[in-house]
Length: 138
Image (cartoon, rainbow, N blue to C red; front, side, top):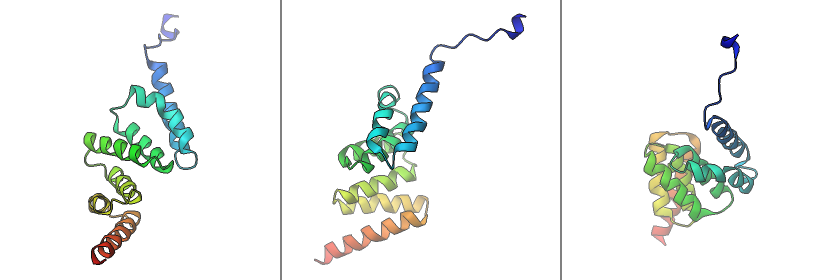
């Protein structure tokens, strides 16, 4: 019967599935094997560079692999595309903290905490605020 014939594959449907699978695999790897996550994510960075989720995942992988300038660029790109992304602000704040740019880190962590006052954000904010206060005293 014609009704039971498989529908033709849409152009790009397979590559869309491949991109999703690559994204999910990179998500699994980002914390424990960030360099491998970046390798898996590279085709998405080439094809979907303007997707905030792709840039955020890349920023996290760069952060976890201590590629802090690249992390900063990726996270700033996320915030250009979606200024309300509190997690991108948090990771950017932590990145700036690791770069020793405490005043900039403080600003990002304040915004992240104001948007989503979870303990992880509050702890990071407290650490950076204390460091900035010490630096101002010294």
